[in-house]
Length: 119
Image (cartoon, rainbow, N blue to C red; front, side, top):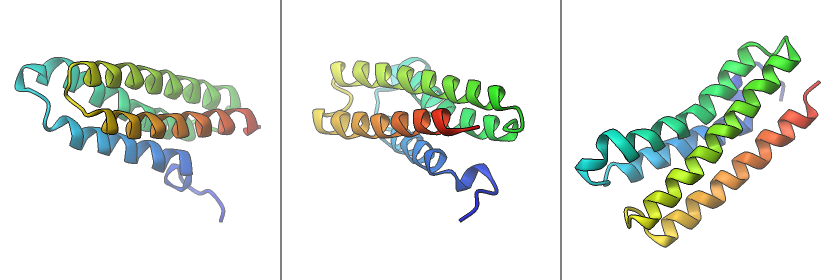
């Protein structure tokens, strides 16, 4: 199937799903975290997908697209750190943390695969 839009990219769809899962999990974070941890993890997780989409719009310039993929991975790493804080603050269970971390690893792997194979 030809890729016509960023929504045809598997890595975009996986990163979008991850961001939505994080959104749903963070609905149950304490109110005092609304403008700190909750906001930060939602923003960083959304940034993963958004950077892929923005890069797709600039894909004509290979280096620009790849830079956005690197930025996307940076946001993914930030998300992992916020997940660790969430676990250590007991806002997510160990099981939730492990599941989300596994999904971040899968997204990261696909980001780098796309980065390395894009010409």
